Image: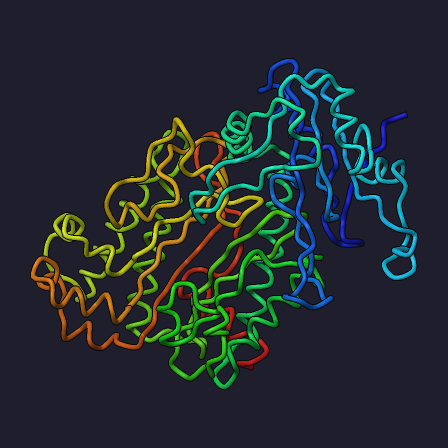
Length: 480
């Protein structure tokens, strides 16, 4: 009789994640270790809202998810290089927990729930590690090159009784996270499909007279109600009109709170999260469903830049070269449209590309929306000067990498004013035309893509051409 595959899902209609995904990750890690080494990771903890007894909705730490998929707070996980066995450590909770929070699971129940080899209580951690004859305890410590913060290193009472190394593990496990397994790719395919469908629902709902946050709510509803995504991967960006020029709009000081007006371009950057895996998709479209000539000029400059990267991306290609390719294509189109003048290569030498697109082409994606591995030891270093210094990675593409491709064109007053006052840049702009775009905002097109053995597979399925968007919105509920 065939063995039963143990899975986890959010219920009927949602993706069933095989727990073998995590055991495969553990085996990949064991294959990189030496005898006598034991990996110890500490999961996330519940965090209260300031001094209250209300907790934030818990979200597991990404490396911990990668190694075991455990969803509860307060846990540890040890991986023994000698045996390949995984040991989960769960908090020993008081009996009263069952009254307020639900059934207390036994260690055997946790073992079945997560398909791990052994389960113990956290207060047994020191003794279990001793029983494993741990010669070297590997803890996780290293820089996240996107946030500048350091990965959480495991600590526990009695750790000083072990020989501990906090340098060996980080580059190994981070690099393993960069190259996705077939099972991880299928989870990513699912969350990208859910997020694509949610964006399409937003596109059908949006019209002048709505608030930006109302469009956000449609995305959140679809991702959770239909896709089982309790979380989104980052704060939703729902910028309309001039707000579309604020790259990370939607935060507490600018909470998607503008009224959408007729003639606005909408830039909606949102991604669901399933089983810890992140999508990150941006759709830009006119609020009234019909592109003006100016909106079409900017949109197609960005679309053609995206198309070029999808066409040229493959293993062996440098990401820096893809960024510059996208810049060239966009600048050429804007030049044809009369917004720019002069030689495109000279524009790039003088940083005109960074005025219109101050961010990088995209980033690695996976268990974090800006996934780890951008600038690991042995990888190309961060380029020294902007705009390339803003790239989140400068790596050579490899099969089974997942990245975003997200060229953009924005009319940011501060950057335009600086360019106008900079003799090296000013002469490339037709300022009479540029002034027409003051308050336009911007356009970003962002797809989540897989690097295959011979090219790019796009996991994002939304209307993208001008004709597709206009047709899709014309047939939507708000434009009938």
